[in-house]
Image 1 (cartoon, rainbow, N blue to C red):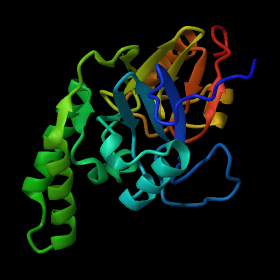
Image 2 (cartoon, rainbow, N blue to C red):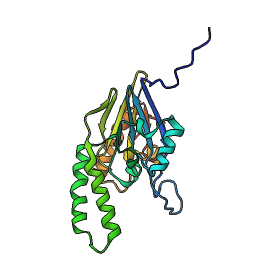
Image 3 (spheres, helix red, strand yellow):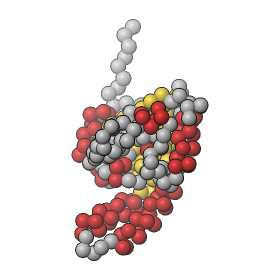
Length: 238
């Protein structure tokens, strides 16, 4: 008996796919010479029932929209939620392509970023229009980011990973046969994963290392913040 092909527009019970691999602006664990590039976060799509959650749209809007079509056959209007693991230009560069969706950020990250950002704007040199405009833009984005609930969709739950930033938070996605953690810069690249290291720019290196270990222990699969996915080797790695 021949297998029946799935309906072309059927929404999967649970679907995780990487839309775009990210990159660090500087990668000291890999580059033998100092190389600087435009940093951008890995962008991931998680669909659970009727929810379509886009995580860390780090490329410019047109590029994110193109990847969404190429990798998942979706339009921007299909996205219901945008979630930022941290609030950086590298994680939200393309977020304006999804103005219709609900934007979420952990409450702790929102509070930790908001006060210094407001102070920078208040103290910005009135003659430096470019800097002031960028700060105003960042403040406007932050205001539109809602504090994230503990769960964004069925089987898609927040997992705090503080350290690299005060409120960095991943998403833990539970499937019947595995658990996947989208961990943002808590584990940025394959080299950081293999060497058990966190970013040197971490807000709190000690907490960042604790979050690194927790990520290894909780998940079967890790989606790295600036790289591909890896199978977690679990306890005893560090």
